[in-house]
Structures are given as structure tokens and as C-alpha cells.
Amino acid sequence: MSVPDVHITPREMEVLHWMAEGKTASEIGTILTISYITVNQHIRNAKDKFGVFKDTALVAQALRHHIIS
Image (tube, rainbow, N blue to C red; front, side, top):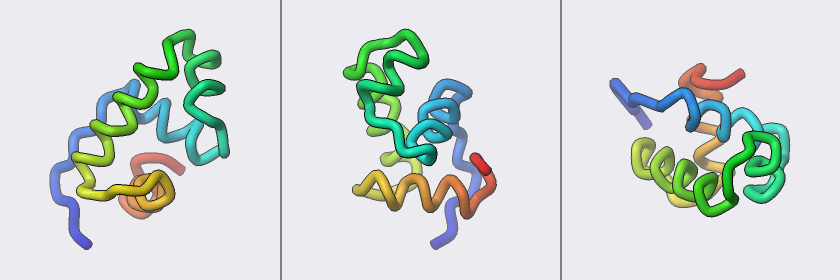
């Protein structure tokens, strides 16, 4: 699957990083001092950009495209 020119915001990158570490939306919210609802919105936005539906697919795509390491 090719995802050219996906623009991920710095906050979405932070959320993706913590998702890859196995953190829940609530835990990520606490770490970033934002609500879990906002975390979930960042996740939804990133999923839309990558065209995926599952969290694991989102993290896999972010890793594959070197957005997170």
C-alpha cells in the first residue's frame, strides 16, 4: 500500500509514538495533558490519512513509512 505525501501533525506523531509503546488513549491523554477524546480524534485523523481502520494497522503504516520508529 502506497501512501504518498501523508502529512502527519506533530501531535499526531506524539500520539502514534505512544500508541506504538502500547499506551491507551487515556494514558496518552495523561502523558500529553489532553483529554482522551482529543487523543481519539488525533487517532481518527491519522487513520483517515492512511486509509486504515484499526489501531494496529495505523501503527504498522506509521512504522513502515518511517513516521515513527
